[in-house]
Length: 280
Image (cartoon, rainbow, N blue to C red; front, side, top):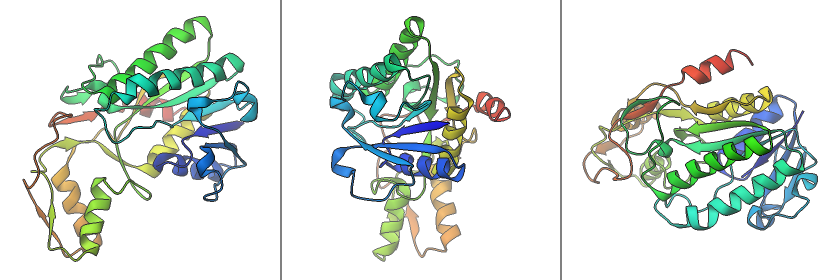
């Protein structure tokens, strides 16, 4: 089976390629032209083009893969930028529509928990999306477009709604890299919010494994929460990391206000994911 990965240079993409390589699968890494020669990829083949200006023979250039794990999305982490629906959404749909029209049979797309919006508590795939920022709106709109496309051009769609991730290669603006940087600077305190918000975290390597499994199934799965199913406080997470690494630093709580683009407590239900994984 041949699997292509878009966004192959990104935080998740690099781990997905490594996971696919560990399963001895034929892989194709789709990268931007500016990134083509910048690093080595654990992929059978590297293809360079910008999906915003994708060639008409994009599917053929990718080697006619059996499945695409689609991770590419620009404009982050500015979740409130209008770029997400003014520019990114139409470009994303054009690119994916072109691949499907050319013969792509299975598509796994990285969605986001921000599609749920400001809803609190445990969130299952049956909860109606209520996105509260342009990024969540654009992602959910792309899902709807692809589901409408399925009615005219059948293909397998797994919409992997990702929650929170951490691990090697994460953006420096993320929580763990910020904490590590503060330790390296010799700071006694780590400035953070009150830390009482509850979130759903998974290691990126685990997420990569789940995405690979969804692609290998080659089935129409619809929306699937990719999550731990276990709420953890941000304060508890930071304290666990400090304890695990024996770092000489203390959290300075309430230094920053809580983010206004996410509710105080939400996490995913993973009943559907667990049922799917039992079949792989």
